Image (cartoon, rainbow, N blue to C red; front, side, top):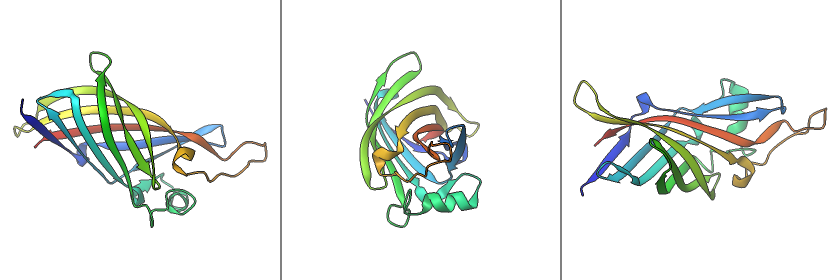
Length: 176
């Protein structure tokens, strides 16, 4: 079976996250620069070899001061660790259009295995004859596992920033 190569289409993709703030609400953010590729045997997603790279300096929470703090040594330390990477280690079909993708996430110089839920949106040709594939990817990580441990106590005895980070990506790939 022939190998199929797919490359990310940034114009039709987004990468977002949410984290608890003051333990009473969520703050949302996104990364605006990222790249990815997938290789499969034919169109069999269970054979997918996934690689994804995020420019940590492209983080945006719609607050310049907070973004600056997130880029600092307290969090991502983008001067030392400019990229966040994900390398897929396996894809398992768990439903009609649902998969579990395992891989190694490297952030802030620390690598940990993670499992992400993938919903396959399908494959279609665009008006110019390009073959596209769409996916929704969701998961959760603990930021402290990756050395992002900064926090501050609140007046009520809680913490300013939650540990669990919810990740959500809607991505579209074009067959190379």
